[in-house]
Length: 87
Image: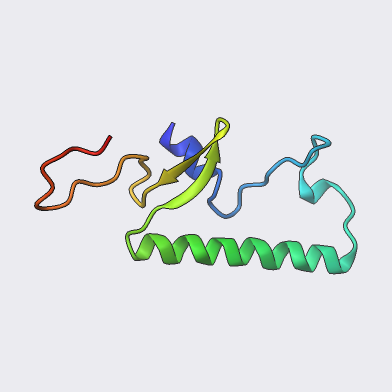
């Protein structure tokens, strides 16, 4: 399940568009294609920056927003001095 969640945001994974095709299967205007690639690159860089800093990224999963931590889990890591486990 962790790998499933990570694959939703890792680079190289093609997402389906509403008509069931992938972005690579439909003809895109040149400017749209450039914008799409720029957006994918920006998202990838933002995710990497968050994870280098040890911060989670928020993803949409099964109809709700979930925090995904750098280790691939949705449970915050226990910090030193924390006596209460995360809910």
